Length: 209
Ligand code: GRF
Image 1 (cartoon, helix red, strand yellow):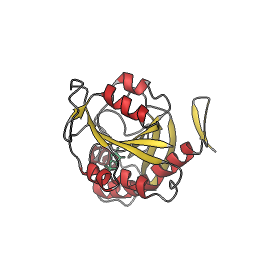
Image 2: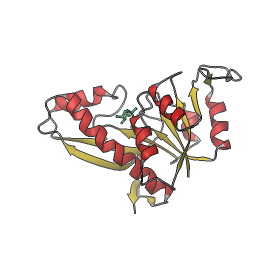
Image 3: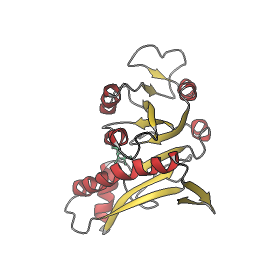
Image 4: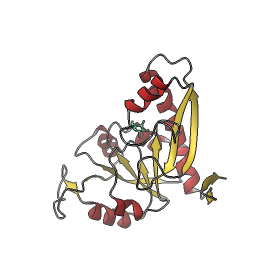
């Protein structure tokens, strides 16, 4: 299965996908894409010789020559079709995608969120803000959620979650570290299930088999 990974920053989840033993032979990262012109995750793509693109709703088509140029979502869509991309993985991609683009990939686009949805999600809930909210709430557990993407932030059907105790955490940074560790195994494991078609949607719930 060919996948595209969308990133906005560091790319540690991209790295986890690329080094996952579970995913070896099951899927290939064919494209990396970002809303930024440059980000650390692009360095990872370079190391693995994966084509990477910056995409924006605000550019005109035809302006895509060379590195450091934005392409349109329409242009990106053509590239994803040409590469036979079957799954889009949002791994730290921070921008809301255009509705038409999301609609083109029903149940073919997933996102990882660094908390236990449906709590601590929605607009503005990204990065350290999520962990600060969890810390302030005095919740005893946090975790990571992988869900299908629909047109609203963090609202698609939940595919899988992993939980960690934060009862003794003394800062939001400490929570962030614990959750990130979970993300790096949860995301590859969900991708593996999808690649093996071990996933079923019934009664508006997702079952992993
Ligand atoms: C992760 O915590 C992910 O859950 C969130 O953004 C962060 C991205 O980290 N959506 P990285 O770029 O994969 O290191």
